[in-house]
Amino acid sequence: MDVKYILNNMLEMVLPWYLILFHMMLNWVYKRIEVGGMTMYIVGLMSGTSLDGIDAALVRVNNSGLETEMEMIEFMTCPFPKDIEKEIMQSLSADTSNVQLICSLNFKLGKLFANAVKEVCHKAGFPINKLDLIGSHGQTIYHQPLKDQNYIPSTLQIGEAAVIAHDTNTLVISNFRTMDMAAGGQGAPLVPFTEYILYRSEGKGRLLQNIGGIGNVTVLPKQASLDDMYAFDTGPGNMIIDEVCRQLFNISYDEGGNIAKQGKINEELLSYCISHPYIMSPPPKSTGRELFGKEYVVKLLKMFESLPSQDILATVTMFTAKSIVENYRNFIFPKTSIEEVIIGGGGSYNKALLNMIQSLLGNSIQVLTQEDLGHSSEAKEAVAFALLANETFHGNTSNVPKATGADFDVILGNMTFPPLHRISK
Image (cartoon, rainbow, N blue to C red; front, side, top):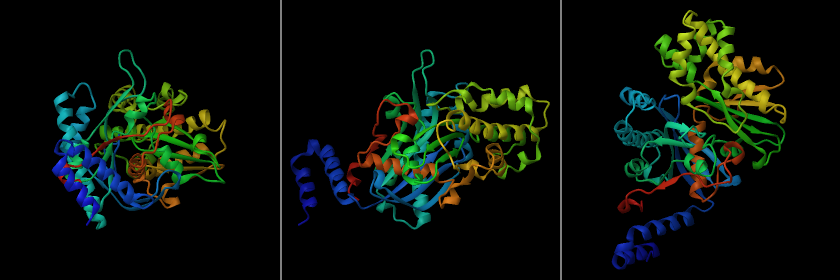
């Protein structure tokens, strides 16, 4: 007779008061025994500062740590319903937000994240009852990386993990940033660990530049150990570009950078933008909508309202490019030899932006996209949180203190189990 069946029945008969605790412990042990060195199927979920929807990546993962092997099975982006997008935007501003809105939105997003898991599994033809784990980043509502008067370093991502676990009947790991911040870090960037696993090179120094709402870079010197790498947020990614598109063109983004290509760079506007103190601040550093969101853009447009709309868009696109390259020149190139810049995230599809970055760097450094290396630019961060969830599941640390400023390595995220009567799938 199955030992697992006998033990579970003994628990139900003899230890009713401790049933929940013992069931969780037993199933945790069973899973670790079954999984050790074998394949896990994980969905990574990411909803970034661009607010373009929920990225869901179904991946197959073998092992953990530096032995990790990963294959992406399926990826999709589930756009936010218009009413949810509006509520998220309202929740991001102190003028339009309230605690009831955030409380309700937390559960609404949990439902949407769970649906994204179901949809990506369905698209892949993968039975959801075979899914081992979900890694959910959540939707950032506010990120306070540094102390500001009475406000201490803190961060808030919503999208209730209990709802995801309930609706998918799967263990969920979420809230990845808080433990790093508890350990003295800024909670960002978190992707460097997974980038080291996937992109380290013996022969080339590489920069992994993500361009989502915010830009962040991971520095991988050639022949680097994990202790040699570092990372930080470079400043705005698509955030200012997209907000200018909404304000001036009533569209959500500049597809392919086609509008920016029609405009001219205004040096006065560019000089104003690039003088932002964040750009020259040394790492470790992280930023978000608090510095480069809607309020910043509204102020910008009021100051330069006489400029043609195409010129404004072209100039803020150049601002993103120049802020990235200025960070390289000031904080990376003086101490690290770099041969390749590999760009991921939604910004990698903006050809105007990529051309600007290449032009600023010159011909000595090659600018590539994730696709050039056989990966997906869109899926990058969703895949990263699947791999971070895998590390947490195996009890491994996965922050990079040289990137976040944390005092030491920590295990990231909180575990949320599915309902007790459905734990044994």
